Image (cartoon, rainbow, N blue to C red; front, top):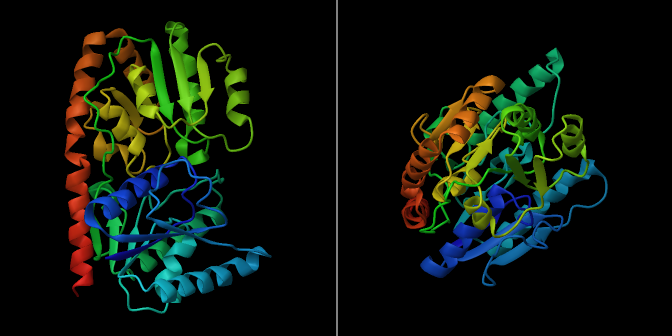
Length: 366
């Protein structure tokens, strides 16, 4: 079977690149598929995650004025489809242009949309003006309409499915790539978060929470692993909150599982999520987790008070209370960490990849 993935980029440290590397490698190595990945503007170099050599990486070069980018994009993906003639096309792009593909691409080849985020995700802060709210509503309506035009619309959880009013949807969670028998000892006075420095990941909210934590627990450290957005806004915020002795900003690392093992708690303060790989990874390494109940990913993974704490979105005081509960009760940390590890075992790679195999075969046979 020949697959063509259309994705903005795979040369970053994000969850989409991580998931795509896991799946693409599996399709080639275990199922003998032929996999092609089409990115944009050097979106496949240099790579952070490993894509085996048998995977064909292609890149669209969009040049000139931004007003002409869409027409270049349309022409480039049509050329790729005509040249490769794949059995299936899979779109992994939450941008608005991705929802135009069923309209602009002339082909009878089945097209799948892989939704990796909330329908209402915003990557930048926008004031709640009447105009911005109207635009957000128009954008949401357009996304929903575009979603109905794909042969299949894949969401990552039943929670995500509730955001979309479509009949062509199927739920396939992200696969868990961590297969370590090891678990964090949970003795270290260290908390970890893994996220890029963007609005949707809500690290600014985490710093406000951490300021309150160190009032009672000044010997605890927060480590944040993630790519900076090019400015020092988080570092400046940390400085203004007097957090410099209790927080460490770290560059992304490939051996992130080792960093989980060194920590005792994982924190997530995202404003939007799809099906967060980092949350599953941390739980697989035995870390108890505290997360805001944002749209829509954490609630699909965390069972509140069992394998972690799910906090009302934006409730700082409640978030602080849950962290302090874990800090002050090692027995609870250990029990909740074990529950976390056990609960994510159902997302093992073989189980999830068989769901993809079945979906692909059902579409190609039609």
